[in-house]
Figure 1: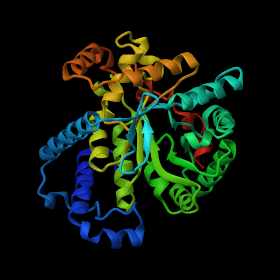
Figure 2 (figure 1 turned 180 degrees about the vertical axis):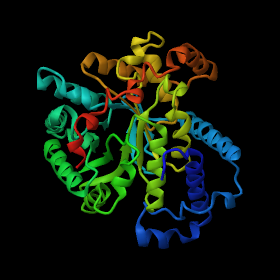
Figure 3 (figure 1 turned 180 degrees about the horizontal axis):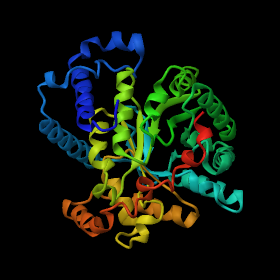
Figure 4 (figure 1 turned 135 degrees about the horizontal axis):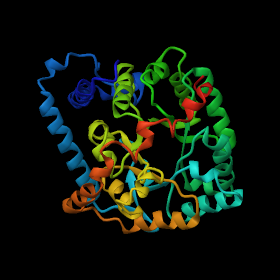
Length: 380
């Protein structure tokens, strides 16, 4: 399915949800046949027969974000050591509002410093840990695995990612991640860097990576399944539509959500409505665009974190390469309160001009962040 049909894909996803609501009487039979990931209607039905106009859907999607976000933020939040917790999509899993990014945890000169950052985060109330098979040649997973000894694994909701698009590559990477992380299961496994138009078809093809991931889930090596990407919201929509075509619904999706994304090729505007409509967990990343948004001098670190937290995100993942930066993220989570519309408007007004051409979002406009572009062999 081409990546140039976002409106049709949104309609497909909306049809999926509406039909699911109408077919609740068949829920037990469907779960017995295919489990919780089976879509209950075909995404290939004619959108024209749905009786929903494109304008109507866009209005519904915007209202869905507002109402869901307002409900999530207005209800008394669960917290641990002052860190708010939210529910991961349609699962019953509770995850910390701020998550600890894995890439930055393989950069410390002393591996013990990496372990100290991870354990401090878990002790302070964070439970969501991000990682990836390819981060720092695997060193990020090795250090995290060491940090999760001595009972710390029980404190963590552990997420990692794989690059494999083939069943063989994906299977090998899953096993290597489990070994490095010193665990018998990963709570959320995601397909990493879905940034090419053909990634969705490769992953869902016969002999593709999804076969390995589903097998790992069946045997208890992983619990939930998601994907991540930073390049194009239209490719995210293609991935969601391709999944629906194969009768599958992701548990979580990771994407850039920040004060500049809102202005340029926006995941917030294009993808977030679909995730909210289908109760898919929203993992916000790059709240500061690595360091690039801060380089623009248009927003402070706390403003960037609070903007992302104000969206209906399940968790905002941020890189912390020192305990001091970790404490900044912890304080941002503890001090977070839903932003007034005037506060959101002020942040967007400050960042609008700088965001126009994606200058401070090079992950969208260049190969700067594309590890699999430089290492295509990782895809299998």
